[in-house]
Length: 162
Image (cartoon, rainbow, N blue to C red):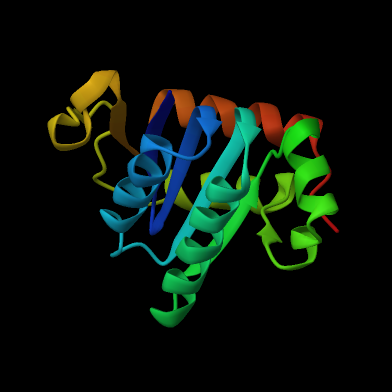
């Protein structure tokens, strides 16, 4: 089963995936979640909690990448686990996808924290994607105490001066 949390960071949507991106419902869950955020200028797929990906899952990622490119939307992967990295290397797709670095993500957080009048606690049920025990949650991020605290910690721990 694949669960997805969508977090808005300014004009970027981050899709935090948890589970397996494999043949079956997982592809349609991810596809529907991404397509629901077509107004974003950048789409980032966070793979940190993806246990497994198969050929069907890779096909979905490739399809979403092409769809985003045709709409002038940036599409990046982030936090690929060792297993996912091995599959991407084996299929030579690590050269095809762009990856969001820690520095890129820090810049997204920083930009989102500077955007006024966003509600950080706004989350939406995912009834349209929630059949068969699947779930997608939406959260919008902005200048909240939590985001600013995270930014301060990242500034202390990362040298982003170049």
